Length: 229
Image 1: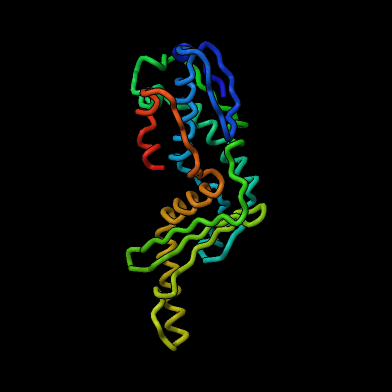
Image 2: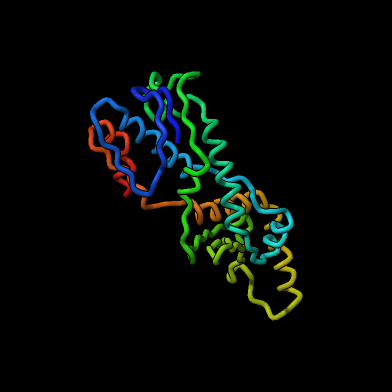
């Protein structure tokens, strides 16, 4: 990460690591640097992943078949997109982070996150599972499941059994499933949004990220995050 012309910081390059401590004299930019790193984690936490599933795989998903996405390919796509979009943040983004419109000087201040910074934040944990239940307008209950499976992200949509009425007639069940498939297709955009988010969380969602500032201003800045932990 590169920070230029921000408060007392003229030109700083740092590598974001899992455990980082800043120490030094007062007024050298430690708190400013921590705020910027916090802004990156906040951005990653709130980031809405765009569709990265190929169209033919989407069709299989909507047919309720499990698909496997190469986690390395998905990671490469997300690393590039997150770094590009973060580096395009306007001044207003940083004004909100600092709660001060005079800190970030448009046309002078530069904050650049490098792809390697993002790549270092990828989670490498196998057997992680994220799931989400949703109720469609007609009452159909759908469960979305995404999990790490070796070098892949395994994803599928499941129609919960209770959504299918008990009947002995094969034709009736067939009609029910056909109707449920229509519901899935009608809600395609929303379903994809949920599935993108689940797969994104397999790679980037971290509950164990904490900021521990030593001064009053920093404590006030991160108060909500500290309380939520």
